[in-house]
Length: 260
Image (cartoon, rainbow, N blue to C red; front, top):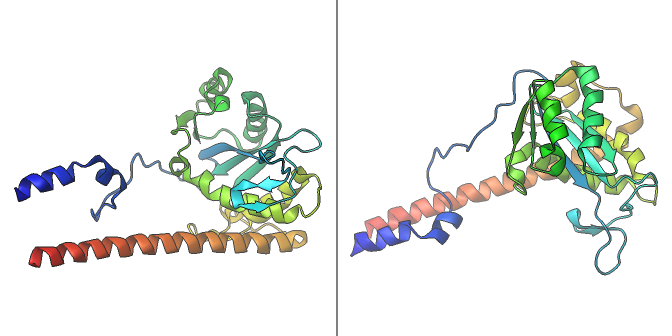
């Protein structure tokens, strides 16, 4: 009977889906290497400026659960931020766009390839801009490997997921008035690329260009971004510690159960 009950529990769908795994070397699913040089692998995605809420609030910023003064559309009609992250150096490009179609994405990509050459690989979700014939053809013509991750699965595109937690709070702090938010992107991009990244031990600019950027005029923004990254790292470390504690508790409970 004990073996029968254990077999039933081991095959419980809810348990398999939600319980923490006690396997020490669980590994990664479809881990993608970051290459061995800058501009080898790029992560692309769109970040949307929140629209009006159903209650009619014009400036609610749902992503940080606070009211902001960022207009949902800039004076030029921009509603999105195209975020491009270099996987190797963490160097980030932020470009305002009016739509999420392939035309605007390709315009940015042509500009970047003229300066830095072609990347070996591009990783995106399955948004219409990245699955369109024009974008697929662009990648084929430039011999770029296009990798699509699952829709609405940000953990599969972790480079972009981490970025969104920093950009929106910084954009919120920069737009204390109803100013043109697109003008604030450069104030965020440069300090972001000059902020020390714990995962690589250097700033993205140092890895990408080989030297530190001179950002005397953006010192205040750089301090804000460092604070946002510090908070992000704290939350990440806290969650990892809690998960490890949970696994350890489950392990101890199993040992105690077997002894009894």
